[in-house]
Image 1 (tube, rainbow, N blue to C red):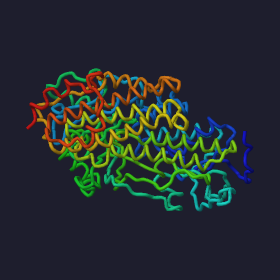
Image 2: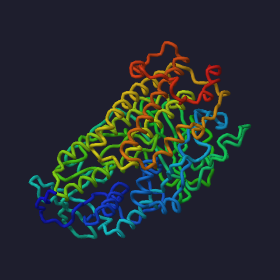
Image 3: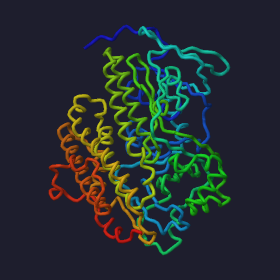
Image 4: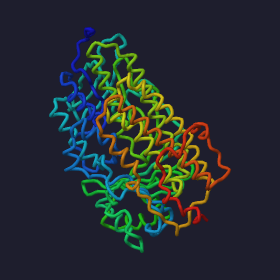
Length: 551
């Protein structure tokens, strides 16, 4: 066993700048997993914050939900004080006054692995209380005035103002969790743009929006029963945009327009009045619901080019960035909490190795390579894809593909606790490489297909029930399985084979609609795959009559 390196005198082992979602969960994770480590958190805003706090990141998916519920032990709070989510749901309803006339994709029953809608104010207040109870030094109302990073292995120093007095804390580790303020990011010049040019405008209103009531206004079959649609993260989709509706436990509803900057300029929605006019044109049923005086507007915010990267997030010099201080993707599949869970887990492991006396430079580099590869691969699900978001035939195929990619590779890696296990990651690399190649080709194919084929007529409305897809239920349920390394690798091989099968079937479907469609390299990637040897992956009934209904 290596002996710990001589440590400089410090006031705290880990100092976290920012006490929002990323910072408080990291503080809890460190105190739970490494109780000998002292942790302090500096947060600018006074606590408690108001409920329905004006923050993005209210919808969780599997990785983030598992992190909160199981890694941090917050399941009871989630089940009693937040809203159990009824999956992600999509309505292809651009310009429709009656949503019952559109195609819809979602689940008729809950999939096995749970997720929740988070009232961020309520949740962060609870995180602050839990962090204090676990022994973290949580100072809210604290304004950071200066950061001095040591170059010689000594202690970092952070100057801040709190309760009218000036203070300095010396720390072995400093973590930037300050969101878009990016304290270390700005100091070190780490900001990095990406090519995903999307904007957003969002607000909250009093009361819940009853989406289920909309679907009963016409002669719509009782599809998706007994689903509670209003508890879903509802996406109302159209060409170049989507509009979210997310219920909050504080009897508020979160609403937001997210759009391709070239197709829907931010200037058309950068006030509440403009956003409502935009909704009246593109999603009139939602606009009509929001005109009810019971749904009083609580706040409004807009953000230009919200997606961003970062040049570096982990350093062998004992600093790191997490949450939006590092990278941010796109809210369409709600990955924000996922990437907080992943980055916090890497940071916690670096802290553990450091205090065990291990050199951490190589691990910091390797963890960063992995983290950036997850970020860049996930970005492909969104970048340049917004033009096809309103296509009611292409998007169900895309959503199925994107879920298969997530549930086959990244989500199982986190659930199984193998995120930092380098020997296993080495054995998994061929599967991740194949998945990446398939995904890049598939995203290009889906975009090409969606731009070249006419959308089905409105009278071709269909129900796409993901719960009825066998492999969706199997992959989702399999996330919580406990497997040894060999069994885990065998399951990964099966799941990547399912991705291959799905790719074959989507390619064949796309070619049936556009015979001269470019395969974008999929033929070469799928060479040797025998579709007849695998169970069907694409529900044929979903698309059986759609071709006859195209305009």
